[in-house]
Length: 403
Ligand code: F3S
View 1 (cartoon, rainbow, N blue to C red):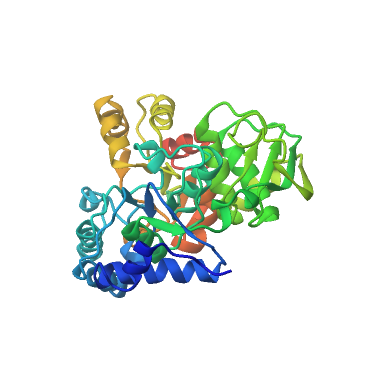
View 2 (cartoon, protein in one colour):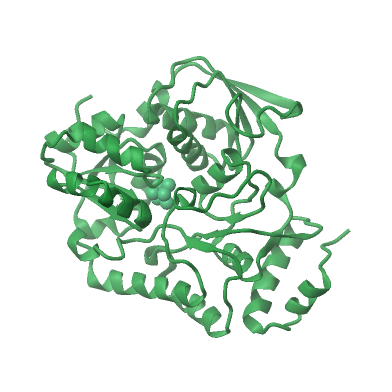
């Protein structure tokens, strides 16, 4: 049986609300047909990827402008993934006028489409918190993982145009992780080594993602102190593999269902995180930048860096990337001033992986993010040192990496 549309959806597909909505409906319907969906489901929020001008270029910008000119507007609350610059402080960070103008034009095109131009990979830290079983259409892999796993919401990893199309029609095709039958765990992961720090959780995620690929892991033996640890775990699994949903026994909302494990599931035992630390580390010694906030930092994560800096000046650059709203909150708490007094910055709106880092002349980065460490070499041409938050702060202060 094929995809069934309501009378209203059929009218939109026929152009009853104009060419912009028709184009969106065509994309949503095409995706539904490709993946064998039987119906569309309403979504309560959308998160759009494909924001950095480095990835979109002029052709992507024209595509957005054309859609906006066809009177397409989003129908549900919609936010953006990080851009390639801090939209306000790009000059102070050293990015070029040419790139900034292109990036600001992209943001303006999204604004004309009715998108709330908060640029973050952590919409769940700035008020978009879908509940258990709620359907959303999010695009950023770590945010998708968080929504599905920690919040129990339901989303596939949407592509850029697919997410925007879902926002314009307020619906997405019901396939993949929107359906009960695809949310069972297919890989049982038994953790037999200590997993303590956020970088340990990232290392674990890196190892499991490589094995799991797009399967659904179910973790046993994991002691999770804070949600930020799960943020690091999910982001890493989505980067080294394509994990969009995982369960943690005793922690995540769907983990206690009696049928959480699918029949025929496989088992993976992890008893050593050192292979992940080895794989994610280069031999770089001089550190140009210490980067925190991948995924974008929460307030407690900013507080931790401030605490560890303890008023000392940094020799390398130091960035904490965060959603603008989180940055504002940190500013009100005096944390931004504390970071700046040490010579660092709390940077809003952007992500180092999609920024034109070569414009800044940086060669080496220290980060406690396994996702960042996975992508920075290939996407930004940087050498990476991966370790704990403490190690990365010390590297920023001394300018060199100490093993
Ligand atoms: Fe976010 Fe960029 Fe990291 S999108 S998860 S800061 S790679």
